[in-house]
Image (tube, rainbow, N blue to C red):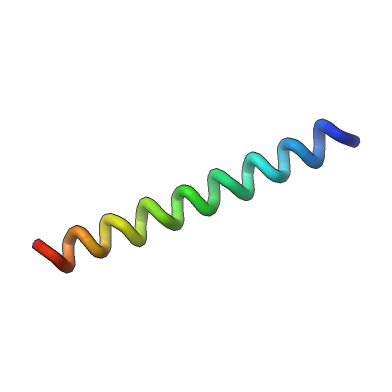
Length: 32
């Protein structure tokens, strides 16, 4: 059970990181 919680947390962090990367790239394009 603990492993599953850890895995879901990791995937959530990965999702957030991807969102930040896309958002950051959009800002970079906007500046350029």
